[in-house]
Image: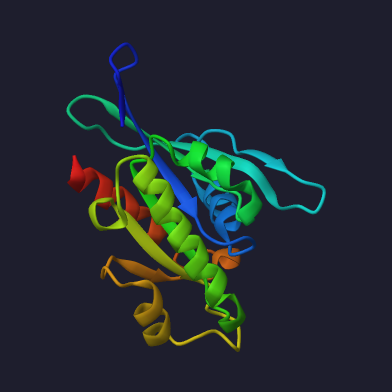
Length: 190
């Protein structure tokens, strides 16, 4: 959280974290396309030649007021590929909340677990931990025929019993609900 007294803004950073091709970028693209242009900024996206997010997507939202200051939410995604570990660390710096986007396909569970462990390592570098940081789970790709049961995903990923949402990011199912929960968690924290 950063308070800009000159602009009378409180700036929050929410980072979408998860394995590559799990739906982080799709979440931000859906939000950007479906939010009123008066309350959102430009979507900045840096991609590699094979269309994977390289650094981050950036979206800012202005909603209501908190103690006479306008809250501005900066939404970022991390690159999902494990070889971008240092970029993940940099993007996570200063985060106020995390949305962990898990891929519901059984073949992706190991990547979900590896990326969740990576998130914990990066949070520790910033003097936090998953057990004392606001985060929400999003179980994405629920429309796929082979998606794991919610009970299985919960037992493997939600060991801290954090809020979760089922989602199909390509059509927006669960996308706004997930963001709303992340915002509520960080607002309750402050």
